[in-house]
Image (cartoon, rainbow, N blue to C red; front, side, top):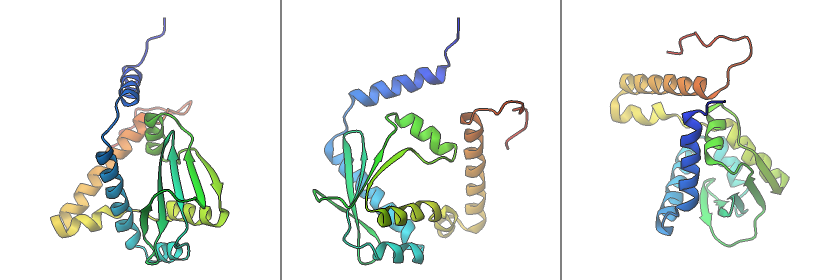
Length: 182
C-alpha cells in the first residue's frame, strides 16, 4: 500500500477550497490594480523595457486563466494600464489548471505553460520583458532599512527560496540530498 504525501492532501484541500470559494469582485479588482502598480514600478526602473512597451502603445494584451481574464495595454509612457472589453491583439492563456502546480513550476524556475494567440511581434516583446526585467528588491528596501540591512534581508530571502526550491524540485537519480542548502 502506497503512502500518500501530506503535502498532496493539503494541495487537494486547497484546490477544492479555491474551486468552491469566490472572492468579492471588489477584492479581485483592487488586487489587479495593485498588480499593475507593482508591474509599472518594476518596469519604470528599466528604460529599455519602457521603450519596448512604448513602441506597442494602444495594443491590447489579454491574460487568461480558466474562465478569468484581464486586459492590459501599453501606454505612451511605456507602462501598463488596465483596459476592459476590447478586442485583443495578443492573448496569453495559462494552460495549467492548478494554481499549486503553477506555483511549484515557478519555484523550480520554470515558466508556466502558455498558449499564445495573436500578434507575434507583441508576443516577442512580452517574452523579452519576462526574460530580462527583474525586481531589485534590495534597491527598494535600502531607503527604508539601510543598505546593510536590506542586503542581509535579501540574502536571507534568497536562501529561503533555494531551500524551498530544493524541497519542491525532485532529486535527480544518483544525486544525494545530504548537502546543506544554507
